[in-house]
Image 1 (cartoon, rainbow, N blue to C red):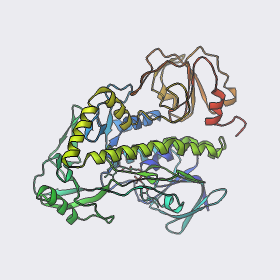
Image 2: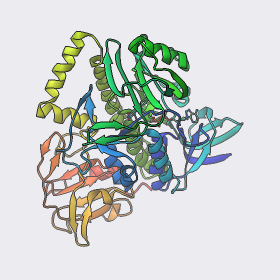
Image 3: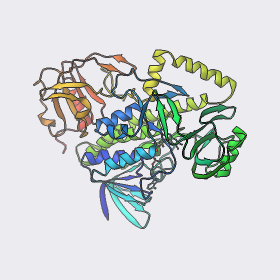
Image 4: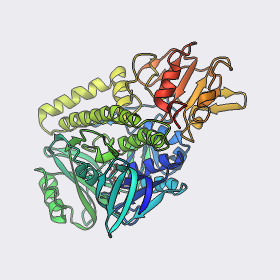
Length: 500
Ligand SMILES: Cc1cc2nc3c(=O)[nH]c(=O)nc-3n(C[C@H](O)[C@H](O)[C@H](O)COP(=O)(O)OP(=O)(O)OC[C@H]3O[C@@H](n4cnc5c(N)ncnc54)[C@H](O)[C@@H]3O)c2cc1C
């Protein structure tokens, strides 16, 4: 039977990112993907948040996405746009780029690594024992892996077969999304009626002045329309779309020749645990919610970046299996908050007059500087704070991409993370750290930094003399002229030097 250290079920954005992270760490990883090619029918996610762009920058691949998308102030809350151009990050914007392009670019990166792809195959069943997981694939094939990660989307077979509960809330609203031809001329743009929000646009568009969307006059029309009642789980038809449009607009604008029609809802559910033995969940397999605010794909990609290096260390015997529990501990609260904020945004979309008044009130609040900064930092993923205990505000937060000066010249912090290896950044006099025991796993970099220390929404923080940065770009330890707690942090996150 073919064996791999890790098998990932599902090669969507989450599975691709995880495969790249594991391969980068030298782990033998395979993806089993039902689709025969990376091609994606339907539009789905429309962009990347600031933090996801940073995460990609940490691997040196952000430019591949930036060169194909459009930078814009896309962060928002309940239709109120939140400008982050004054945020202390190199990427103080979001990126408008359809999911099919995001997946194509990610897949291109993964193909540069020795990742085995089983395309056109489906995981149909699995069973775990003390040493691994045995998987049954469509076509009577089987595989064995030390670990299985379910990145197989909201209807995850991996989650269900592992018996992991998926508690949450049933949908209260549904919308149809489609690409169609129309004989009539629909009003392009976003509209709000007594039924809710509907919109017409084209795939090809330009963003002017970082905000206004300008559509071309060629090509099929993309339609989004809220349905009068929550639609069934079955595949929507052209007739469903026509009826929904007539109910809202009084006409269906002569729709015909659909390329695709899909339905999304505000169902909000989250896996009770992200790990059961040798089986882990990430992305939509672990959490589903309304697409409002565009956080699904971003949360999944960031799940993968949190899990990748931890799983690699466990597979390589550098860390104990308990390190994997920090994946649930850190990422479950992040998605729980996404569920909460999408539910709040859905509630604010209700078309009645009182909700309209509430929306106006919230919008007014978000116009004030402090609430804008807080909500924008949340919606763009820049305020994520893993609970690593008391201490300096940097602890458990993203390391800023500082412009350092080293003996070999200028260097960006994110460049140090390209190979996904941890970094001990010494900003004090060189020579103070003895890292001999960890030399094979942690890079010690002596550098100077003269600029400001500022975090999104929090503002200025005291300059540390040293920081220990994890491969996912989060700060694991902060030094303030002493090395108190450093050995503990190194051992917790990167294993004891005696473990190999
Ligand atoms: C209408 C809509 C709009 C959205 N807008 C946004 C947005 O603006 N921003 C945003 O961030 N997110 C958005 N999302 C959410 C986003 O599309 C998802 O969060 C994202 O695709 C999740 O990625 P994933 O890799 O976890 O799962 P998926 O993309 O669902 O990928 C799962 C993969 O697993 C494969 N698979 C499934 N079962 C099996 C199996 N048994 N064996 C093998 N392979 C299997 C599937 O073929 C698929 O390729 C939107 C979603 C929808 C529906």
